[in-house]
Length: 260
Image (cartoon, rainbow, N blue to C red):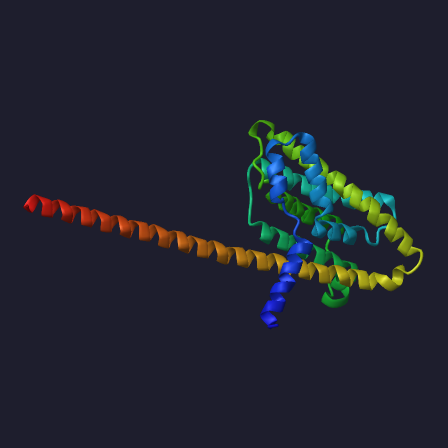
């Protein structure tokens, strides 16, 4: 087996593990969706969004007070709600691979911050934690918006559909945190110090894999679109050439007929 084929298999595996877009079946179902369906889809997308979950784990990893958790999660929620609602409402979009690549970077950033990387390796103060969570929340919300815009949203209930999807995202977020936080509490009572570094290095490693996967998807999709564009142009030129040939043949035939 060649190295190239091994790399291809790795990316196929990554696609299976990391892909959490709007599936074709969901797109079909959502063509006649109720507001409850949008809530369900938002919750499903958040829970199956490994990048979102990993970032949230990084955010609450060292938090012990409930008030701190509320403060940080509120900043993240406000951030992603702003971009999710307004980007979808005003149809502001971008290549979702690039947006998800930035989201993957947010996972790397949080693991790096939790390891004390700014002081230890860069020799600088840590950026304002709340502000950074809010900024990354904006980016996560934009990523959610790019997925939601893949659906054919009903113009008559547009704002209600967006708000319902956002509500579903919040419910999915609460569900994920209600599972993760108790596990962190249990770990703090036993082997938390031993696995702390390993866990945050795991965040960095996972973020790097996600970043590579998304960038690969971006460049692959660009090459595919370029090739598709070239094929369409060649087909168009062929049709024009064929039409010119037919017109010339028809003109010659009329000339010969007139000569007779």
